[in-house]
Image (tube, rainbow, N blue to C red):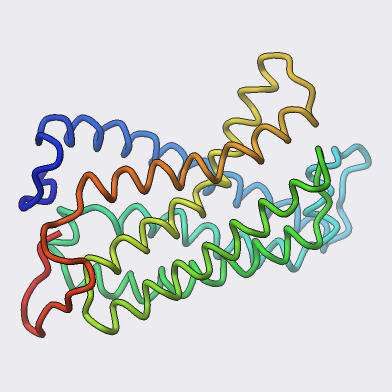
Length: 238
């Protein structure tokens, strides 16, 4: 595995160790998003067919009550979870740059749409815990949209290092939903009440993912200025 060859902030063994841990966590969280998207798609389809179970918990009811919105959100969420990790796998990006560009042209607009659906869900779906914490989800969705829009602007300007950084930030916030779901289950398994677990998950999940992304960005930032365009025909070394 090659980690940003022209950066010296951290020794290569440390970067490799962090990368290994980070990829293990990322793959697990991507699996959580993928599995939950499939499950919620099933809830939505059952609701459209009039087959909602008589006994259903309030969290699942959020999706059966909004089946079409759930289907659209889950479809984009599944693509986001599958293509996201592939976009950031440097060996694949270097070996198959054309595939990276094609998948990026799918992933980037899907990421923006995911952010839009996350915004509508934050505004319209019921939530638990403190009502004021709804604004955290709204802020995360707006940041995710802005990050991917900025990433698109930067890639059009051939500012690939800066594009990479904003793609990482947008993806990290999107995966904050997966971290929230994992943390919610962990806290409940420790005996914490659902509302309290929801409060802690809401406060911790998105900032934690964004901080982790920012640390990785700064540890692997190339010496070339992130705002300096790369000439056409030159392959970016990231």
